[in-house]
Image (cartoon, rainbow, N blue to C red):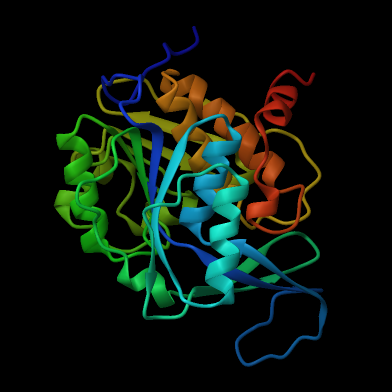
Length: 303
């Protein structure tokens, strides 16, 4: 028998402001293509170069918006051309950018190498992202989504405020780092990948710390979902031609938040998110790769 679809927690799917509030990073991604990712101390000749809007927060905000959610983005950029470019992305995607502040630091950068198999290696320079502070008050939303490219103290404060306001909280613990008990206890849904979950102590540790659901993304092996007192279930991967895995995890998280805000049970939302993540691997870049709802629907019904 198939597992009964579950939500991570009881929540009102009707937004009191917007569907999804994303609190996170915004970067300009500097992407080099190469035959392979260099080993330590090695130089490899590149085959291509491009600059794309990115940052886990911005990527996930775009993913949520393209999955049909109304979105507000909370973050910071510098007073520079890169910051102007990222603000333009919010405008183009109809994302509320009134909480995107201008900092004294330069806009964040991500230095990315992508090999011929679509695998990547990333170094993030936070810049203005290190200045992101909890907004007062937190924008009203059905779902609040955070990542860890901004100060962990900000994430903790945002999650507590979101819970107090009745929002569902979703955390993508990337880049992985030790998380304080108050952060874990305030996570309705935590979304680590297969490597991050081990760095965080494993599924049982996360559930024991208070996370309502642990959604483990495993790339081409699909997604495993673990819930407190509920069923564990697996979502099979979608077969696509992989070009670049950059932004695939962000597509998953943003689209998951959008569907949870719409009131989908967790099992249904995870399958939508898995399709979105798969589609994101078929397009180079991070923001450019975020799929739209019609493409996700098409993949979901593909034989």
